[in-house]
Amino acid sequence: MIVTTKELFKEAYGKYAIGAYNINNLEQIVGLFRGNLGKIAKNEDPCDSATSAPFIIQISRGARGYTDKRFLEGMIRNADEVFPEAIFAVHLDHGTEDVCYDCIDSGFYSSVMIDASHEPFEKNVEIVKRVVDRAHAKNIVVEAELGQLGGVEEDVVGSVKLTDPGQAVEFVERTNVDSLAVAIGTSHGAFKFSGKQGLHFDVLEKIQKAVNAVKPNFPLVMHGSSSVPAEWVARINNAGGAMKNASGVDEKQYLPAAKLGVTKINIDTDGRLVWCAIHREFFRDHPDKFDLREPGKIFMPAYAEYIIHKNQMLGSAGHLEEVRKVLQK
Ligand code: G3H
Ligand code: 13P
Ligand code: ZN
Image (cartoon, rainbow, N blue to C red; front, side):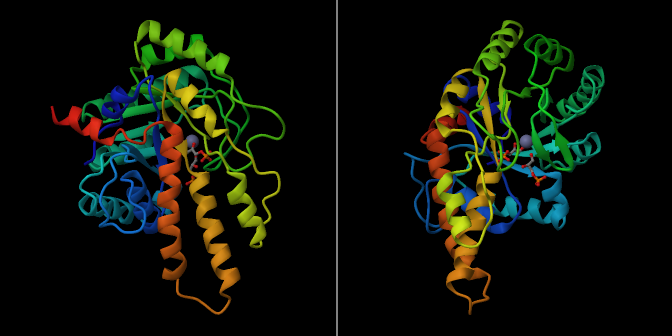
C-alpha cells in the first residue's frame, strides 16, 4: 500500500526513523520489499511481524534516467501487488523543480524532494514554496533541504555548510514544507569521513528545539547516512575492488538522531556495496559463469537480510503492524 511520508512520520516521530532506500533495478526492489516484510529467501515466505517495517522507496533523477522512469514505476506497482502487506511511500530523491512537477503530475509519487539547497536562501525559499503549493494541491508531501552536505550528489560536488537553526525556523514557516533535510555532518557516498569527524548532535538538537517551537513534531531528514560497513568493503576489496579508506555513519547514531526528530534516514551507498560485493565474489569464484540470474539469486536474499538489520538499527523493525492498525482506523 502506497502512503505518504507524512503518515509514516506521524507514527515514528521521536521514537524511530523510517529507512529511505534508493533503488535502481528489479533485484534491489525485490530484496527491499522482502527485507521490509522480514522475508529473506522467497516472496511467498510469511511476513515476520517482529522485523517487518514501514519504509520509503526513493527514486533519484539518475535512477529515472538509467533506463526509462516508467520501468521503475511499473516494477514498484507490481511489487505492491506481489507484496500486499507492504506499507511504503514512493519518494523522489533530490528533485529539481521540473522533475518534481513531472512526479507530482504522474499521480504515482506520494512524496517529492525539491533540492534547491545549493541556491541562496531567498531563492531556495521561493522555489520550495512553488513546489509545495503544487504538491499540496494534490495531497503530495514535500521534503526540502537547507544547508549543504559534503560529497557528490547527482552531478553536484558539495562543500559542507551546516544548517543554521534560526534559518531553519524561517524556512519551514515561509515554505510550509512538510519535512526538512538538514546538514549536520553527513555526506553522500562511501568516503564520508577522513578522520574522527562525526555527526553534530549539538546542531541537530538546536534545530529540533527551534523548529518545534513553531511546528511541533516537525520531521527532520538525514541524507548521506549509509554506514559503509567495514565487512562489506573488505569483501569488495578481497574480490578485486579498490575502495581504500571508505567510511560511513556509525549505525549506533541512528536512534539518538531519531530521538532528536530525525524521522527519515537515507541509505543508498550501502545497498550498492552489498550489490558490488556479491557480484564481484560471484564472478571471482565462478570465472566460467555468465548467467546474470545466478548472482542475482544470491544478492536478493543478502539484500533482504541487510535491510532487516538496517531497520533494526533505525528502530523501525517490528512497527509495521502498528502502523497498519493506525492507517486502518
Ligand atoms: O543523493 C544521491 C543518491 O545517493 C542518489 O544517487 O544520483 O547516483 O542515483 P544517484
Ligand atoms: P548515502 O550515500 O550515504 O547512501 O546517502 C544517500 C542519500 O542521501 C540519498 O539521498
Ligand atoms: Zn541525499
